[in-house]
Length: 225
Ligand code: DHB
Ligand code: MG
Image 1 (spheres, rainbow, N blue to C red):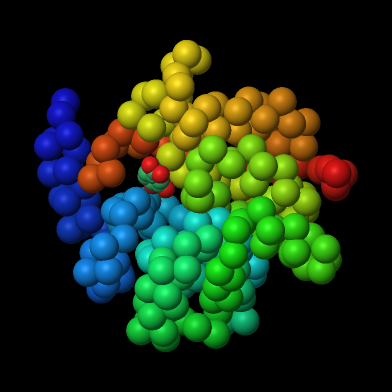
Image 2: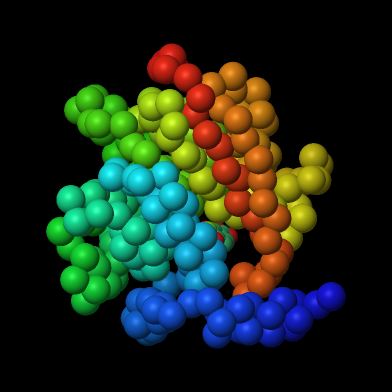
């Protein structure tokens, strides 16, 4: 099996399953020269379905980029629902804000342009209500930091999803000197040893190559400090 097969099958499945995509978001993102690190549309729909399946009202996203996954998440929320999405890069945040406005979703999406660590610490200090779903898709070396902080914004039943945990298979290489892979490896180790979480991982192929998600469920009421 090759990347070409994955792409062909992705195209087929998208044709069968995905009615409304946010292609205009990707076009604006490409025009602005942002990296093509967005999820695929099938993966976007997975995020959308998970948000709907848990009846989420409040969703947190780390790593907005151009807002493509944000729109899949936010359109799964009820009208009074909220997506808080955090983007460190001011140029990316400008494009994301344009995309949210063009999609008519500015009421449901609160975009924070800041370092994710700083923004999370602020949300914790403000005693913001816990989130139902948290999607971690920011800079990978900081994944362990983001997990520790994000856990303080959860409740029993919160679903934590992380993107790019396979990275072409590199995640299994203990000797890697890639700081993104090291970040993901530490993140997986932290998930596995956290007694508050039950976790799994889903390896994926498709238009975004070979990668994967972790899915974790918060299972108890004890807040970690
Ligand atoms: C990278 C980040 C992503 O979120 C992604 O989906 C793919 C690649 C990266 O930083 O390499
Ligand atoms: Mg990603």
